[in-house]
Image (cartoon, rainbow, N blue to C red; front, top):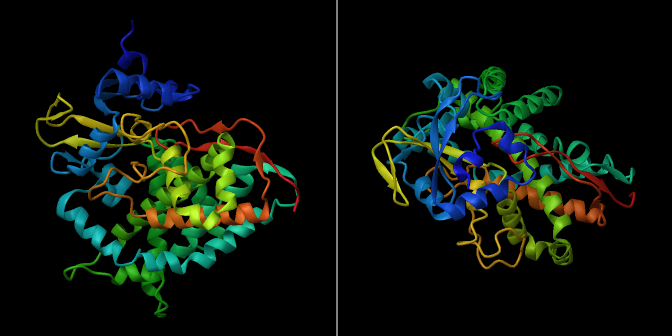
Length: 406
């Protein structure tokens, strides 16, 4: 029998072309907890790499996530190795650890608060209605391109003060940055986003108005007397738009597809939307797992589930596998809004790097599905989805739907 590690190598672009990569991860989980994967040269990474450990079970992903002393983020969260400058550009605080990460996160937490998100509710609802109403009279459309496409982008752009005329380009750059995550093409896209953000930050600094825009609040926020520099804010801007646009669109699009596969869950939700919404949104995020992985680097010799890990080794946490781990999550393959608890790692496995935008993502999803069920109550998937070819984002390029014209 061929070794599972060789037959199922997520470092290869062709791994992500198979119809059901989840089954490949199930094979890996059933064989052992930790697998070594080589990084041969490929279309995505022409120079190849030095290989990495894949962590595929729930409990081990949580352990690695929470132990930043042993498994650090500061060498990058992408599979591919990068220069220190690229590591900084690609993730900002995402690729920090220890005191530096805690300091930056504390500043952002002063500004991106639950109150800030709640204040966006009306704006989110306006954009949800606009996205749905523009195709309501058609009777059919592409859910991803025609409805969801720019919904999360408009919210993030409103938050960050991005002019309307600039938003299409920003959305396109975000798609490149995430679908080709870790490649030279993605790096150049992120550089362009940061250059644009630096212009916006400079404009915000020059404003005489104290209207308390999000960027102006970031410029003035401080912890222990220290503020983020303009460049650091621009890098955070790039992180927020890349994390907040594509991943939320992925969760909504794949969520719609999931509801088509489990119509009884959809029926329950539509009959009691507000009561079931918190549980439904959390379960959709688990089932979808919009971000497939993040990487860590071992700071010392260690073990994961009995597997020796050498200092300097790359360790990749496959969230997409952990969220299907049936040894921890009963009937993990199913969408089930009656689960007793929300056990998943779609926002990270806990620890200091838990997703900063989780509150905003939940709010956007709740309001969007509320408007969708109200305005197009019989909307249904009428064809197979077209998946993005990406090892990082579990996104859809297209999803055909039909409905009674409104």
